[in-house]
Length: 155
Image 1 (spheres, rainbow, N blue to C red):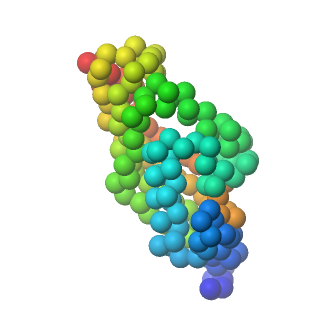
Image 2 (cartoon, rainbow, N blue to C red):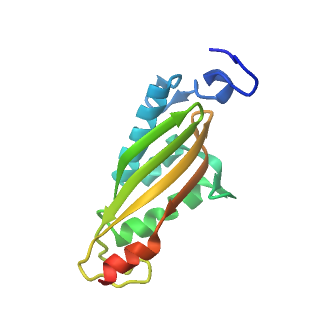
């Protein structure tokens, strides 16, 4: 594919044709969808050491410059909520952008979000938008209602 209109870039120009992880070349929306679902499966398996396959060394996190190490700080959440789970409900692909609506669930076994564990579980919706370049996330933005999780855990 090549640029067909001003501002519309081909997968090659977007860096989406780079080799990823298991030797798959990313060139279509379907490839990007499968790659993202592999990211979620890796995240859901709590394999944070594998995040370098998906997240660039330097990344914009919720509008601020950061590093992949900042993203993998979620280890604290996983330690507190060992069954932390992400379920993709909606997944939209637009060239180098990914938009997701997911449901996050879990049952804390340690203090989390300032709440001591009580055996209560939570279920919250997360919205996320990503930008991919050279086969990895370079921008990651997410939004979820932590206050709702706290309410569920203290109800």
